[in-house]
Length: 356
Ligand SMILES: CC(C)(COP(=O)(O)OP(=O)(O)OC[C@H]1O[C@@H](n2cnc3c(N)ncnc32)[C@H](O)[C@@H]1OP(=O)(O)O)[C@@H](O)C(=O)NCCC(=O)NCCSC(=O)C[C@](C)(O)C(=O)O
Ligand SMILES: [Mg+2]
Image (cartoon, rainbow, N blue to C red; front, top):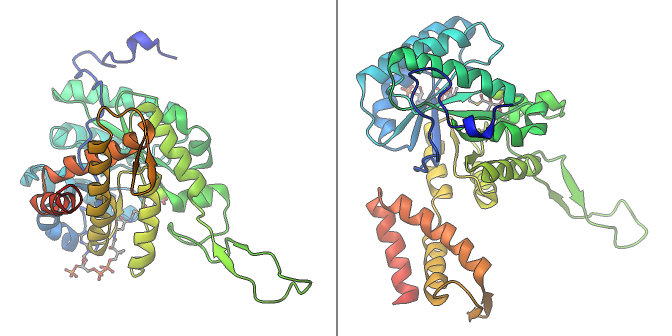
């Protein structure tokens, strides 16, 4: 284990100094595209204007015989475009694959100055992050980069979940973690066949009213991902990095997608993945606090003065802890509104209604 004193020292001579704090910029949706797919790539400049994060995916969902094309496509797209405030991320192939070494060498060398975050799939423990950490430092030094690349891990193996706290704290490069429900289900030998979302068989049933167990009894579908998302959120919060729900594979079911995203938002996640253009607006809606919640939060903050003591607002007790929650919502709203005049106007109009 490295000494805590060395934690923020560069891992290669000439590599940029690691960041001390993870930048918290909007990342409500991480929009996935295959850079080797010409139809998708053609849409990227327009999509970039609507999303917080664009991610060139090189791993699963890219056919084995299209891996080089995807990598070359991402280099070409990054060189040809300036995406302004929209971040550019990539998901490289897994560390046991024949492609990842060339992914990292090519991307850092060719477009390391354009990339913000490198997403690493199938992370099993801190050792995987340490490997990427040192290699990135060597490549950054060789490429003369001045800003360190950040690393995002996908939580999609049983050992990754068991080791999630050490993964979150494995390097100052760690930017965040996303849930990978499909690989995680396979790794755990869950008996689902879906990419995220619920399952009608995972339920609880009300007790019988009498002796007849066969009578109609209400059932409630449960969230298969609650434990993992909650654990991931705690690990990320503990280490000052950001948690994300991952993909929702039933593209057609925009209603259940919104529900799953909202569960993650309420539990502490900052964003989710959009796999198809139709999921972009869902993520934007869900991961931007609602105007009425923002107005309420601003009212509680205003009425709580220095933030201590207890007051009654509309019959509800507010104290030091509730004002802290309200600050989380209000600060997120301010950060999002700073770049979005429409959202800013909606928040201000709702606030005016309650505060006058
Ligand atoms: C689902 C698919 C096949 C449906 O693709 P489609 O072409 O059949 O759909 P469509 O509705 O007909 O598409 C309409 C138009 O939008 C385009 N389009 C469609 N999607 C996109 C996109 N993302 N970005 C930009 N453009 C897109 C598409 O090319 C088409 O263009 P056209 O009108 O010119 O014909 C397609 O949307 C797709 O391939 N999406 C990305 C899938 C992906 O990245 N999967 C990997 C992430 S999930 C994962 O890996 C799991 C995880 C975490 O690892 C774990 O849980 O283990
Ligand atoms: Mg996966």
